[in-house]
Length: 217
Image (cartoon, rainbow, N blue to C red; front, side, top):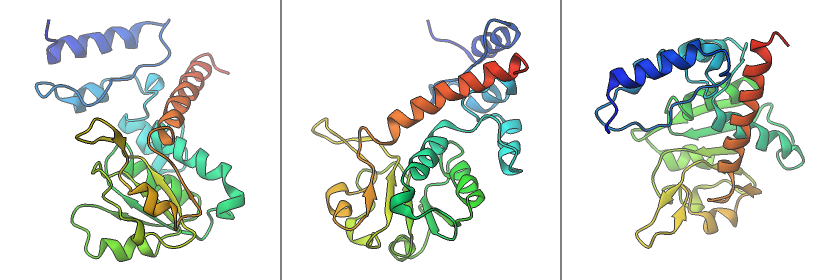
């Protein structure tokens, strides 16, 4: 059976009312006949473990983050764990390639709040190679296989590849040409096996955060 917009809205409403449920997420992207925006907006912000509800995005923008989008949060944990490589984030130039609500926009806020100077690039950015080449931290989340070329990377930069794409032969790759970029970067995440597991871990953390908050802990 093909779910309708009304079906999904009613399901979210029921989950909102269920005191046994602490976390709700909607697996994106939805089929084309469904509009994700009103569905995501209908989730109780206290149960929004994806961190996509406007209420939680607003809290993040005001440095009062509660439930943060999982992939950007996972990227921050990776960067924080690599302080011996990055020498901290404060004062570093960070370039994000991609401006989605899921990764690019919240990523920019988190890096800015860590005192990076942040540039958000996208498909219409001019001189993208030069922007990337000046970055101490590169976060690639544009959804194009091996789009970021290795020679773009500043020697010693840290590269976080959020993309996951399937080649014609069925193998997976990221948004960065990994082998060439790895020759210049001080650290780089692989695809698969880099950011993906961190996203899942942060989802579990958000579920715990939501549960504890709802219990007043």
